[in-house]
Image (cartoon, rainbow, N blue to C red; front, side, top):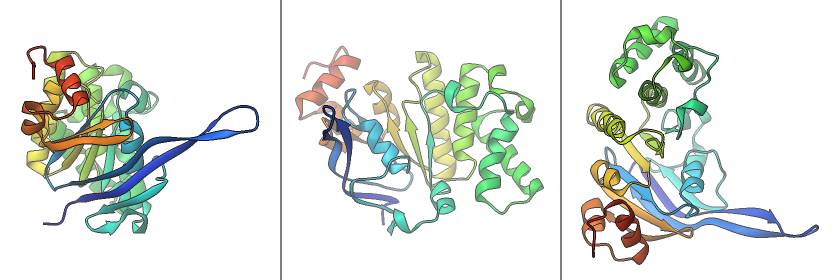
Length: 259
């Protein structure tokens, strides 16, 4: 079966000022190759500065790749219209306190992607919003709420609903658990797993906590200094890591790890 996402020799470089009249090139990541199968979860892990954020922002279209190719369902991503791209790949940002507009209601937050990217009429959009709210475990009453009226977990549920409103094939989740305490993290993780079972959504999941990564992911890819140093099935990576950086990440979050 053809993967939903295929990445070939992808790289991203930035120009950085180096003195008054000169600059130098900084490579955020380079030579990255991987695939994502339908209905599976790929976790991308690595220390701060490893290139994770630049990579997922390039996949989401927020950054332009310096070189390499991205294919969605076998098609070069550059051949897709903005609407096709939005209905294929969506992103959940790290902190909903910043990514949700506090001045508009939940209903308007969820309606905006539908207005911009679909031909649905008002009634059809409303029905889609209600179905998506139900999917993430929220009642229709929340449509009239503003983000500041919600608990932290409810804000995450709205952020997930906004990502799922167009029924995308791929969701990129960028450190979405970082602002939650441990008990609430598993609530959101279990919600994402439930959505995947219902919708068959593929996830790219970026996180630091290896215990949560092991729980939610099928495969793990480890980035270090912009390069992939290790990738494979989650159990294999966690039980038998080959690279010292992977062992360090496991040791940081799993005190009993001694390999």
